[in-house]
Image 1 (cartoon, rainbow, N blue to C red):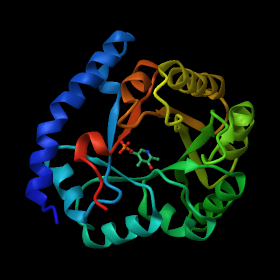
Image 2 (image 1 turned 135 degrees about the vertical axis):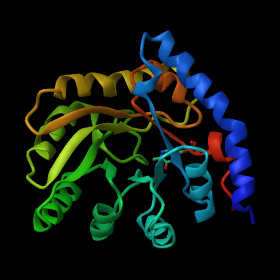
Image 3 (image 1 turned 135 degrees about the horizontal axis):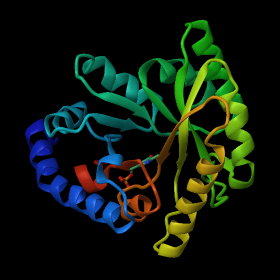
Length: 236
Ligand SMILES: *Cc1c(COP(=O)(O)O)cnc(C)c1O
C-alpha cells in the first residue's frame, strides 16, 4: 500500500520534468504555458494520492468512474481541489457526476447531455461540461464523430441546464505521431468552428494524456489529463 508521503515524493520528483515539457511544447507553438492546466488523473489510486497531488500544488483532479469519484469525495470533502469527471458517465450515474464534478469532460451522447441538463435545470443551475469527440472513430472510444462535432456542440449548448466550455478528445493508443497530431488538430478545428455558437462559453480543449501530452499542447490543448507520468503506474 503506497502512502501519502510516497505519493508526494513521487509527484515532486516527476512534476518538474512534466512542467518543463509542457512549457517547451507551448513555446514551440508560440503559446503561453500558463494556458495549459494539468488535470492530475488519480483513478485507480487511493484517496491519499489526491491529498499528495494537492500538497504538491496541483488543484485539478480527474477521475474516470463516478463510483470512485463518490468514494474519494466522501473522504476528502474538505480538500480544496477542482474535481473533473473524465470518463464515460452512465446515464443512471448522471446525478452524482453532475453534483460531484465541477467539470464533466465526457459528454459523449445527446441522451447524457439531456439528462445532465434536466438535473441542472431542476437545481436551478447549469452543469459545466465539455463535449467529447471521437475523431479516430474507434468503436472502443466514446464521443461524437468528428463530422457531427459542430452540430453536436450546438445542440448540447442549446440545452438550458448546461454550460459548454469546450471539447475533449482521446487520441488512439498508437505511437504514430502524425495520427496523434491530426486527432488533436481536428478537435481544435471543431472548437474554432464552434466558437461563437450560442451557449458555447469557453474554448477549452481537454486533450493529451501521459503518452501524448506534448503533441496535444503543441496543437492547442488547454487541459492535459495526466495519470501515469505524474503518479507512476496504477496499482492492480
Ligand atoms: C486514465 C485516463 C487518463 C490518464 O491516463 P495516463 O495515460 O495514465 O496519463 C486521461 N484521460 C482519461 C479519459 C483517462 O481515463
